[in-house]
Length: 149
Image (tube, rainbow, N blue to C red; front, side, top):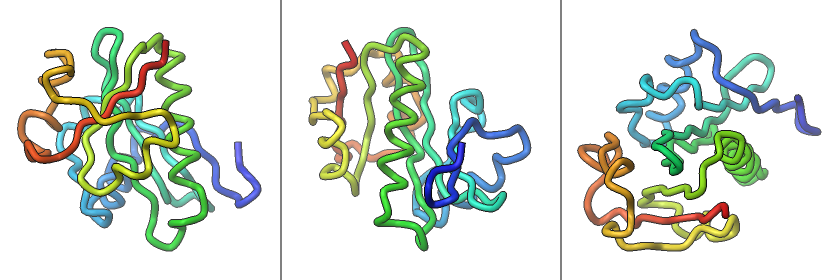
C-alpha cells in the first residue's frame, strides 16, 4: 500500500532480483546469497521503480535481517525505518523470536527498534551458517539482536 510519499512496501516479485541487487551494489552492500531468500525480500517501489529493500533469512525461530538499503535520493526521509518495521512485522508473521543483524555502518540506526549489540558467541549456529556470517561480513562487523518475545 502506498504511503503519503507514494512509496509502497511489499514482497519482491520474481523478476525484481536484478533491481534489488543493483540497489544493494549502489549502497555498497553485498547481494551474495540473497537469491536463496527471495520469499522474504521486501522492496519499496516508487512509480514502479525499486527504491528500497530489506530481507530476512529465516533460521528456525531466528532470522537474520539483511540488505536494508534505500536509494540515495530518498535517504533521510524515513524509508529505512519503514522498511525495517515491515521486515520486523514479517519476522513476527513467521513466528521468529529473535532477529539478528550484522552492520558496519548502521549501528546507531538499529537501537531505535530495540536492537542491541551482542557477542557473536550468542548467535545460534544456524544463523552463523548464513553467507553474511561465513563469507561476506568481516569479523569486525558488530552483531546486533532484537528479542521479539
